[in-house]
Every structure is written in structure tokens, then in C-alpha cells.
Image 1 (cartoon, rainbow, N blue to C red):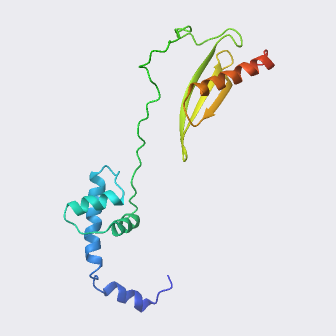
Image 2: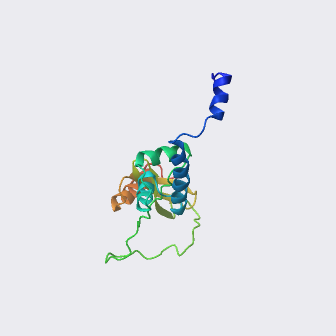
Image 3: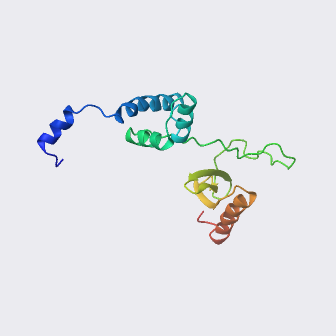
Length: 168
């Protein structure tokens, strides 16, 4: 550590500084508030809660304490509804009736739309699967979940089917 032996022993014997005493106490209080928040609060909310409890502490100090003790807030993704069932648009009847097997290629296609969280927001993916081969025959991605997303995936699947009808 590149410290002299005498300096190390002097450091061991020296009393706790006036600055260290409140920091030890605050560390316990920060951990307590953090745990009570189900480990969701970051330094701004922890500071606010401590100030409400009568502890005079700055956000910067709370940030330093949290960083030194490896305390990080957990981010919780909010639920995002992707289906709107309350509409007056026509609804297609269930033709497959849960029979997900096909006897030949291109007899039955199914689609699905899913979303993937990215650092830039949600990415939506629509895919078309041939139930005979279980292969994805068309797909499309977009920043928004719209009917165009699904239509583009269907157009891609249909275009591939027209180009290579026996290979799908």
C-alpha cells in the first residue's frame, strides 16, 4: 500500500474524527431508509426522507454514503398495456381453434407481437410463423406498436412465399 509502518500504526491508534462520527450514524440511517423503501429509493428520495425525519444531511453526502456501501436503487419497469380490447372494430373469428399443426407448408400461419426493452426505449417485433416448419417466414420491427407493424411482417411473409413457394 506504500505506507510506512509507523504511519499505519499511528493511523490505527488515532481517535475517530469529528467528521467520521456523524457519517457512521448517517450510514445506518441511509441503509434503514433504503431497506424500508424495498431498495427502490435513490439518493434524492433517501435524502428527502431523512430530512423529513429531522436528519440534516445533503443529497451529495447521501450519494457518497450509498456509493461507498454499494447501495444502488433498483429500477422498476412500469407495466405497459399493449392491448386495447375496448373498441368497435371487427374481431376476426378463431379459425384455428387451438389446432397448431399443419400437414403441408403454408397451410397455416400464426402471428405474434412482442416488445423488448432497450436502452433507447421499447422495440416492438411482429413475427409470422409457418406452423408446418415452425420457421419464422416474416417479421418486422418498429418503435411503435401499430397495425403497420403487423402488416409489414405479413407483407414480408407473403413476398417470400411468392418468391419461393416450395421452400417455406
